[in-house]
Amino acid sequence: MEVVRPDSAAGGARPAVVFFHGGAWRIGSREQFLPQCRRLAAAGTVGITVTYRLTNSETVTPVDCADDAAHAVRWVRDHADDLGVDSTRIAASGGSAGGQLAAAVASMGVDLAALVLFNPALAPDGTPRLAFMGEGSPDWGVGERFPPSLVLHGTADEQVPIDHSRRFAARMKALGRRCDLVEYEGMPHAFFNHPAPEGRFEETASEMERFLRSLELLWPPGGAPARVLE
Image 1: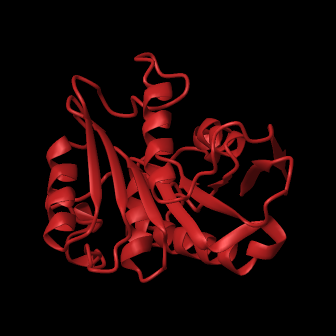
Image 2 (image 1 turned 90 degrees about the vertical axis):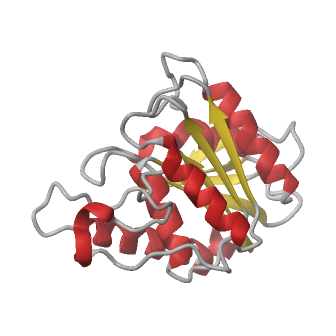
């Protein structure tokens, strides 16, 4: 993990967001979400970005990736005092495969304060299950305990069609759960990265901040500069 938090610990334990990178469960680096972590830390919220096992090893499956993701959130909760984190205000986030992992963590019974999903690689029915694994996929579904969720998705995404996120949002709302789906017209997969050729990092980061602030998971703007703790 890399932990990015405000220099000042004034005000007590902070909310935290745990990020999981994309890369089809096979490639990628936790550095993908460092810009978002720094952005949150500047506003007083701890940002944590995680390395998990990848399926480029024959012994690792996407289910192992999800187990690592769940373990990471539980570890943050268990070490909340050391990290300066409020254990009751931990959110999960990720992009593409990492978005699927964050949603899977919620479906695995890990308590989360919120989900922030960037073009998540959900199944066509809008669940976090792994459709390509067939009967070998765990039955990860959207349940009544799912936390409030924000989904950011481009309408021109050819890798993960936006209909997958639309079905997720419909499932959430049918259960009476909050789900803010923000569609970005004409945007492809991974348009939110920094730097992105389409230049939508600032827009998506601001949308993330708006959502987190509405749940009291983001401190007011103008927090102390961030530093990275090894």
